Image (cartoon, rainbow, N blue to C red; front, side):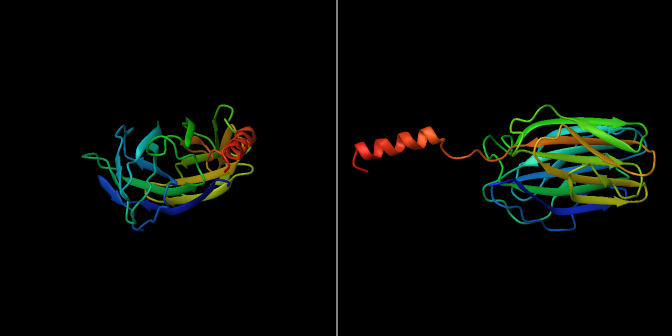
Length: 235
């Protein structure tokens, strides 16, 4: 079974706040990798990592990147019996001038480890003070055919993001003030340059992941051995 990503919600909040709650109530699937991609901004370079709660899932930080007054994050989570509900992103006592929250889920992934750790093989980050595109470099994939490349791209303009070659869009949140656009994208198969572009030359930042497919069943040799054992014992 292939990995199948979908977006549960993508929202932009322009009102100053220390905590943001998704308007939508999301319904994650059992044993799906849930990624919560966040972009926050304030007048000076922020450094506060939020806590993410909701759905009976423990959300764990995968990676983050700061550029200018923007700070982006990707959290991961997974539960056998998640609950439906809203997601809260809490920055403690630090006020943010905007926040984007994109919640995606990925079924058909490796469910080993805890909180989706087996599904996230690697991550990487990149940013630039100005530019019209950004590529995030990943290492060679563990499974170059079936694993998925996932990217979060953020840039400081309220305009459409152009997908990288071969990528499909998941969620997008954008608005003003301040002018921001965040987008998540995905692609089946190895792509070690997770990229996107836009029109205005502005500050930009992003995070890329390799997401692992669920392991296949027993190998052919193991299946054959099992069959021979069954015959010997009369099974």
